[in-house]
Image 1 (spheres, rainbow, N blue to C red):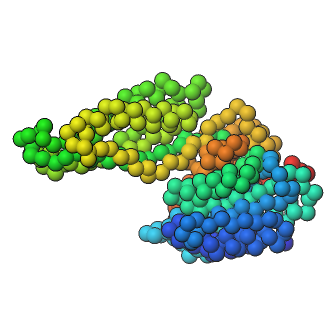
Image 2 (cartoon, protein in one colour):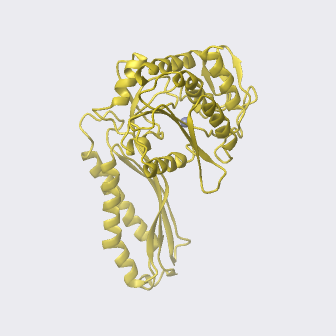
Image 3 (tube, rainbow, N blue to C red):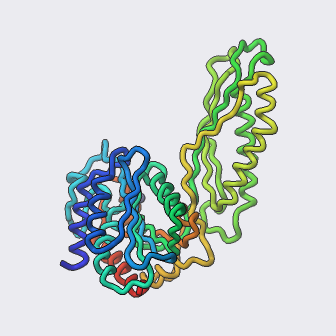
Length: 385
Ligand SMILES: [Zn+2]
C-alpha cells in the first residue's frame, strides 16, 4: 500500500472512534499507541485525573533534546443537531473528498503522521521525531496543558512543533490568545432606602467594567510595531453584566463575563496585574469596610495562549522549506500552538483541510490536501537523519 492508501485506511479507523470531547478518547489513543509501538516507537500514555482521557506522547529516534513534534488533538466537536449526508463517524469518499467528523479537524493530520511513522523508523534518525496527541482541545486545550506539564516534569525538550490544525497547508506563525473570565462580586443585600447599610454588588461591578474600558484603551497603545493581527492590538470585550433583582433592593450579587484576546503575553500579564491591583487596593477594601464577607472572585473559564509571531522561528523556516511556501500568515482562530511555544519550542500550525469545513456537517478533507500533507511529512525525513 502506498502512503496515501495507508493514511486513508488509518483515517477511516480514527473517524470510527467517536471521540467527542465529552466522551473518552482512550480507544483511539490505544489504537494509535499500538500502531506506533509496532514500528518501534517508545510510547507513553498519560491519563487525566478521571482516567477516561489520555494524551499520547511517542518518540522515534535518539532519546535527546531538540526533536521535532508532530501534534494534533484527538477530540472532535459533537454532531448533535447537524444535518449530515452520511454517517459522521463512518468515513466516506465522494468526489475526491473524505467525509466524516474529524477528517479535517484534525484526525487527517494525525493519520498522515502515524502512517509515516514506519518510514521514519527505518531511517538512521539523528534527530528524534515525537508524536503528541492530546485530549480536550475543543473545550479549552486542557490536554495540551497537561502534556506540557508532563514534558516539563520529565525534562523532555523538543525544539520544533508542527500543529496540524486545518490551514489548507498554509503556514501559520501567529494567532491571538483567548482568555475568558467571569468576575463574581459579592456584596450585601439591603433595602434601597438605606444604601449605606448594604454593599451594592452591581455598582462595584460597574466600576470594574470601567477599569476594563480603561485597560482596553491602554492596550491600543501597546500594540507591537508591524503587528499583523486584525485589529493589531490586544482586545477586551465585556460580554455580560448581570446582577440585581428590583428597583428598591441593594443587589448582593453581580457578575461580569468578559474576555481578552492578547497579541502578546506581556499584555495579558499587564491586564491581570492592573486588575489585581485595582481590586486589592480600591474595590475590595471599600466593600469590606461595610461588610467583611464582601469580595471579588475571578473565575477562569479558559485561557488559550496565543501563538506569538517570532522573528527567529526554526519551525517556520523548516516548514517553508518542506512545503515550498514563501511566507507565513496569522489567523483569527486559536490552537494549542501557544502552549508548545510556552515550553520554549518554535512552533507553526500547518495541516490539511480547511477551517471552513471544521465543526460543520459534512466535514471533509480533500484527497489533494492529504497528498500535500504526506509530501511535507515525506520531505521531513531528510531533516531527521
Ligand atoms: Zn482543531
